[in-house]
Image (cartoon, rainbow, N blue to C red; front, side, top):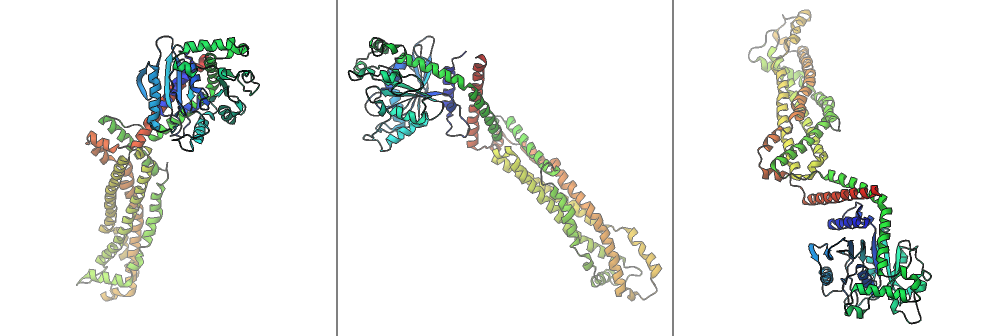
Length: 610
């Protein structure tokens, strides 16, 4: 089974490479859920020496004032064999075997972020991995030393800025706090203990480390602190003896320094009974063991977080849509699939699966009949108008029996009025279909991804509707013209019979222009026109549905598809001009999803093997 800490280190490195720290996304982050150890202490408390003792290498910058001006995420990887080397996250393909060069790179990278002549700090961490057979698997975060006074070249806010930065790391519930305090100062004034107590008042995740024990005044010792009598923590205090500045100047190596540390605790009477749990070697092993225990306890919550995040990432990726294909065939297929989705949504509106199609029936059931009623054909067939039209139709020779030409002209001039409502019905349905096109465009999620394609599909659909409207208008008006062009003979054959029953054809021809006769002619024509209106009221909706609605469902984008097949790769690519921000977001999410799936598989494997 892979060491748990190594697994977490690997996941943390992947999170770092992807910037998965939660600043840019509302999604939960794996980095924050993974346990880590933050090293906290005041300036000159011996933080750097403790870290170097745990690692066993000189690699940290030294000097007066604030030396650590950026967080250093230090990942230690125990190797079975081979040499020792270091790698920086910002220099992924470069190995450092000279740890003096590591120290210089830390300083240079700090200066690149904060400025060489500046004493400013930055919360952007430096990530360093050290591989060695002489280290334990561990992740430590070295934070800038807490200070009480700003020095020259620093803003007045530096004291609060450093405290806020340190607090942002250690206030996370998954952070283990390594509080470094010098033994030659009063523990009550320890910056590390003060801030640790504020974020962890019960000391449940704080480890106390006492440095500079060998530098205490003669006659004093740190036994009460190390035994937890002066300030009790849940975990035992650990004392360390670091190299002195003289040792560092003489380049005393870590092996010799550790040996001298062991001898100090073993041979000093006050600390002899505590020697088994003192020293930097014990500190490293104890932290490694505790970190692994914490990680094991967090596995169920990690699994839950990872599963939830995978579902959210998959959901957002689905919303963003698939990435654009690279080849012409793939692009064409993608466009066709998106268009088919749009077309299906449009059909669903018409078929009642989605709202909107019912408005077409409203045109046929309300708007069109109301328009026919508004024609007021009885006024058109007033006595004066009937007299005028019959007289004009007779010309120089009056009719003999019935004014057939007058009848025809009266019928034609009345029925022709239906053209207006018929055209209006066609236009109304056209308007509804256009509205459904716009709705369908908005409801096709894939089209939001590609603005140019959305415009082209919308234009093509509207152009198709325009063509269908012209065809529908032509067919509908032909129905009206057919009623005008051929009158129903059976209706008028009743007229002579009525004359025989009640009329007297022997009267003067001029008597037939009297008011009663003209009213009768108007009444007959109105009856016929009403019969024709009833017929057209049923026929016109059928024509509109057949020519517009049915054809829109059947062939809305046929012309667009035909033109699409003629386009070159470059033209197809121009239709799939996705927003660069969306492309970048999808790529980022895909990488995060890959990371989380990999982490899920590896953590599940660890969980099953326990």
